[in-house]
Image (cartoon, rainbow, N blue to C red; front, side, top):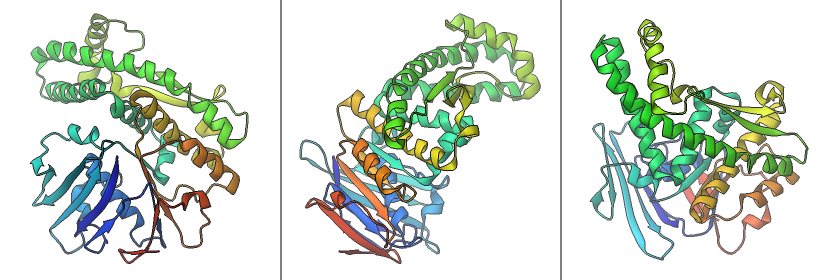
Length: 361
């Protein structure tokens, strides 16, 4: 799977154009603020129907315009080409694959597997529990459609239960408890397995790239950890109902689970240096790539947004070696940044990026 071309109109600061990208490695070189990250963001939007930077799709529109359009030609592993377009206008998004409208964004997730590495990934290590939940849910959703559906159902029921609490509709609570318990228990079981598998990958990778013997691993603490059945969860929710009404929200459940990055017996974010935290966030993403590859026997597309900047030469080499196979990778670099010659083989395209324009080098 690879992108063969990417087109944009009224997207961020990018000049309206169609850029050929038919290579296994595409390197974007330019100063900060010229459009390198926006280019990666456009690819991500076509993969997932949302941005990895902006919460509101309106933010993606070029200043002074009212809509934007993205388009791409993608070639799958069997050599067949696919036309994808994304248009946002008057608050509505329209996604087309070969002229057919995609109603459910779930279809996009399993159409173009894409993993982005960015500076914000450090929040997986030092940020809130929500950041780590999002990371693991994303990791599992990439290869497990059933988990994705359970997560979607759980969130829908959680919204309904919270609305019932706020409206004092006590008669509906038992039904929501049962539905919440059903989806939540399956999610908890899958998270337990996923963390076990992640801990078979992540600690070894960190030691290898960091060239240290630091023991870093993930501890999973589920909110319903003592519950083994749907009935157990229902009883727990019923016992806590008075508290939930007092707080006006559901205070227990898989939306409260914690994934804690530990160094030995200490919380890593409290004892690790900024450099170690940054490196660990990169290894998180490599482990995500490995996990996806193991589960699907497929190679994802990688978007690498200036993440090599803070690594020394040795660690850069080790990091790139551990990425393993990928169907296509996009790298961004500053003009004077030294990147590995191994990234510049015959199947590489390099563009200079300036003021939203792209010039082949």
